[in-house]
Amino acid sequence: MYNLFKKIINFLLSILSPPFCEACRIFLEQRTILCKNCVQKIRPVAVHDLRVTAKSKIPVYAIGAYQEPLKSLVLAKMRSDRLMSLYLSEQMYARTPFSNLPCDFLVPVPLYFTRIWRRGYNQSLVMANKLQQLRPEIRVADILKRIRATKYQSNLGKLARVDNLKNAFSLKKIDYELYRDKNLILIDDVFTSGATLAAASKELLKLKPKSIAIVVCARAI
Image (cartoon, rainbow, N blue to C red; front, side, top):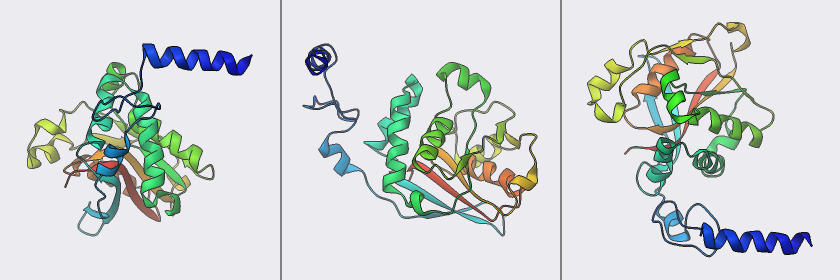
């Protein structure tokens, strides 16, 4: 009886909400996020070293280049689509070295509260929580806060992006000793100029961790 009911539900869903590829929008036979053709279009990128201070460079790992089809999945946050964030975190686990990176704490890049109100969630925190489920031995440390509103980085030039992020982040009231000599991974959805992740990383360096790495969904090249 249960199997019959399940088949009826799936049949009705296929009619009322037919599955389609989130990138190219073609209809699919089975419900999935991307069609096989779009999956093959994901362009891998090499690890990138982000210069944070004169003495500090942090490795940045990404699923692929910030172009289609990943771009459409990342921008789904604008319509508050949590499903895309969950899918992307699974891809971060499968398509980056994340599963083998030394890690004690996952640190999501925070949003200013007004953007959380508009979207209903912070996509970086959603991804960090999903990644923690895939690596239960590590913990999510939501220890950064965004202390002022900033303009959208995509609308700014390179120098303006750096200025836009000055004093935008700070550490919450935490015990610094909990994170000293620990391995931290900073989680975000996209790396463009690197200004956001550099500003966030500078705050994490105050904790004197053993290491910091950055894992994102997509990186502009």
